[in-house]
Image (cartoon, rainbow, N blue to C red; front, side):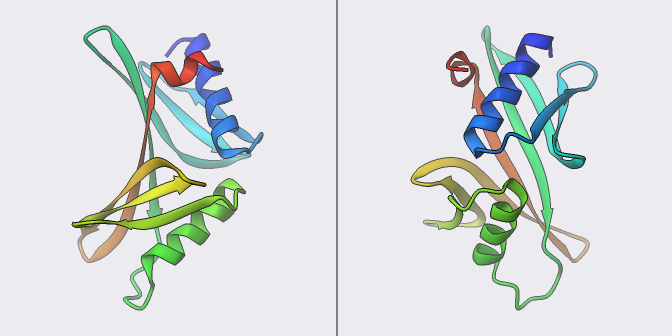
Length: 137
């Protein structure tokens, strides 16, 4: 990722989540890390397909293995606290049991995939960002 892309992604995520403490830090090749303050949130990757550039923000969320944890309210509370935005909410997906959806107000922003590995359940937030999303920044 070049400097221009990093700046645009940084501005986009700050604006999207309404959190001025978000920052994008480039790594090598087409990768960057996303932080709030000193807390590492996840990774941004870039991809190019037929001349169009897109990005994906990926964040791993561990809620613990207690079977009594209700994922929708727990994930909603987690994301609200993590991003400092009470407009975030998680909802179930019709006809899908392996994932949930994340909204910011009424706008769909991401999918949360359920991952069960070695008896541990985690959620993978996948937030796609198109190059046209960055033009407005």
